[in-house]
Length: 175
Image (cartoon, rainbow, N blue to C red; front, side, top):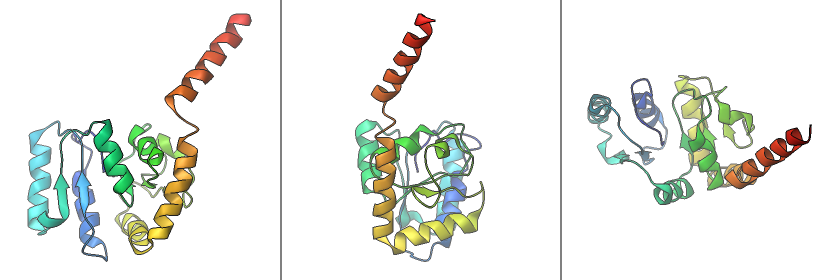
């Protein structure tokens, strides 16, 4: 998972997800900025409480190279809360990584649940666990979803976005 970990981002939900997975070898990387130290410390306490220290890695801010490394090696990107868009989902897809993000998050407008990843209701622990278990059990499924996500992401690059904006500007200049 990758985000700016702030109040309300709920990293502890991901700890609960990890705790409930069938495969006890699965590891979780929590990458990104920790805006409030108390949010990070609360998460670390939860990790210790559930004896998951060997299965959770907390990293700092991830630059573009680190994001590519994480996403290209991940079975899935998971995110615990609704986001207006969630650029990290598109970034993960660009690296061939399927996504599990809450239904209605803006990035879900580009992708289809069950094809490119899954979009459960925010806070639905059972659904998150079920979908991650599927991808852990079936590496081929993760690869297929990731590949299909990559195919969508390559249609939504900054260059393509800029060309569409330029086309709109030119169209309205003529009017």
